[in-house]
Length: 425
Ligand code: HAM
Image 1 (tube, helix red, strand yellow):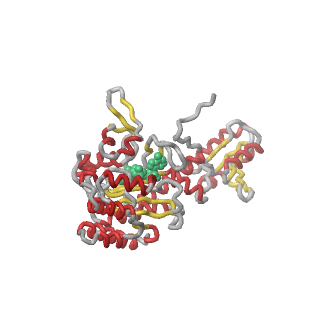
Image 2 (cartoon, protein in one colour):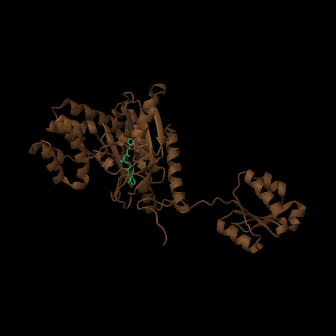
């Protein structure tokens, strides 16, 4: 019987690993361009870090166990609580704003399907210690660039943006009691999958009258002015809407207006968000979100740290990888072999190993045959590995301290002094 891995977990064969590496390296590059520094935390955390703070959806998906010291443990399903704990412990000493990024592997017991697995790698970029709307805009710009970097543009994906503060005020205005606002926001998030009727029933349950239910269910994309007009009496709505307008103006300064739309139905499924929330979606919307994030100004204090505002996002490698495959944006695999050193008879093996060593010291990727097979077979092996040069050491070359070098692309061959070959690299 051949054994198979767990459902929802991936084996990374070299071609899969090459795509993962392409994505992770691209993310690192974008994070660097925005001035973020990298950190990491442990893959296991105390269970309670998530049970209070993340919200019911993630808690249902936790991988948990009790360790030998009788502690309740969870595999990390997201990075934000770890970040809040780590920053919280050192916050006083760190200059603000703190701009950190990480690319952890995360674990969620979800039903595996296209774009959704039980493990994934997630770029997290977070800013701590800043309230200005300029930081919100820069963070969303970074998220957009972390996708554009791979060759996708505004025809391929879009950023939906809303504000939990604004949604909260609206829900309060229509009659949701203060203590149940988070519940109503999470219901709004679920309405995406459950539909309008389900949402209407949930809002009614939360004490909203028919007119109120209609005004929530009917709000539509783009319509920030319509929403403010509808709640013209509320100063809080006007203020929250002004902040969003400032955000959209800044996105225009970033040159990214084509990517962002206001979508009051976007709420996000995590409990800790307090302000701006956003998600990046493939335009056709067939996969789950590429990325999601927002402001979470109360979380640091809630995990026992100082009261510092924060915002960030998480972007998964699974959905992005699917998109890159679909759009033909996966780069051809680069071979790691530059030179293949051929030895003509076993007598030249030592000389050939010495040449290989000098080339490797110069940074070249070098492969050799282990068994002294025929020159023809060694050339075939070089070809299969995609080597750009084949360097042949035979009895004459060994005696003359030379090598015959064949350019594998052009087939051109010449004899060169060894010293020149090595120093010319
Ligand atoms: P999230 O929306 O739960 O947010 O996840 C962010 C992204 O991770 C999703 O948009 C999706 O691309 C990817 N993702 C999540 N679960 C899976 C899965 N089971 N399979 C494949 N991909 C997945 C968070 O995790 C927040 N902690 C993000 C954040 C950081 N907020 C502030 N800072």
